[in-house]
Length: 98
Picture (cartoon, rainbow, N blue to C red):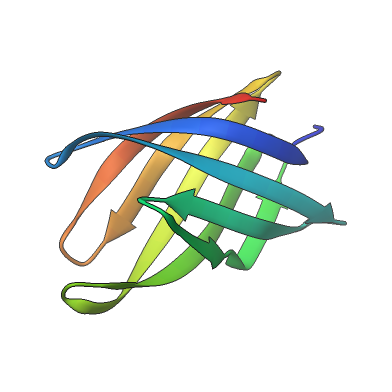
């Protein structure tokens, strides 16, 4: 799987549809990089890759304080999809390599 690269991502949640960007960097079976959403860019932490599956955690400041989100997803060619989950809920995302 060649997951490394940038993806334009659309997230669907209770807050509506949001656009963002995932910039994945691969180091063996470790996922690194950044997630950009709502004008905020944050590093991916604790990232892992297993076959076509990936996961990681991002942490960002919000109006409610620091918020951690767990990202899990799968890659299929030039597209990715999955979920982002936090204590207050979650969202589904889909993305395409840019």
